[in-house]
Amino acid sequence: TSPECTPGETEVLATSVVAEGRDVWLVDLDRNTLMRFVSDGRAPTVSADGAMVAFSSERNTGILNIYARARGSDRIESLLETNENKLVSDWSADGRYLVYVNSNASTRQDIWMLPLFGDRTPIPLLRTPFNEVQPRLSPDGRRMAPRPSPRP
Image 1 (cartoon, helix red, strand yellow):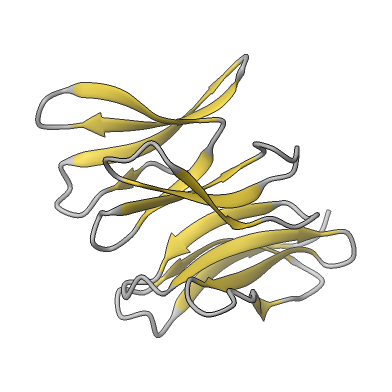
Image 2: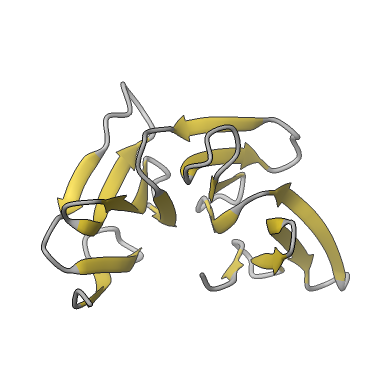
């Protein structure tokens, strides 16, 4: 996944890959500092207000699930744990939804949306015989740009 700027563009979230796993780092561009934001995480995406970071991680289950951590807190909250791998891709501008790619044995990689309110029942958005990956929402949240790739 690509590095992601926080609102205000003074910090960047990035994932590093090391022998022990993957970590999410917060790079402060003004201070030129680096801080490990979360261990065993990947695909970080920040809420529009900059208060929360969602990420995928294999913690606790060995399967990529979705978690979040508030900035300024050490507490990590589980947002969605199932028996299929999920990779977070984007956060809606209103903060109400996370968009992610769900891996499934029969349809491969599909685009889903996770409401962050109510019972948080995931919503399938695009399920085809192709791999849909790296969806990004438009700033107004009305459009999405997936990058499909044919099955190998």
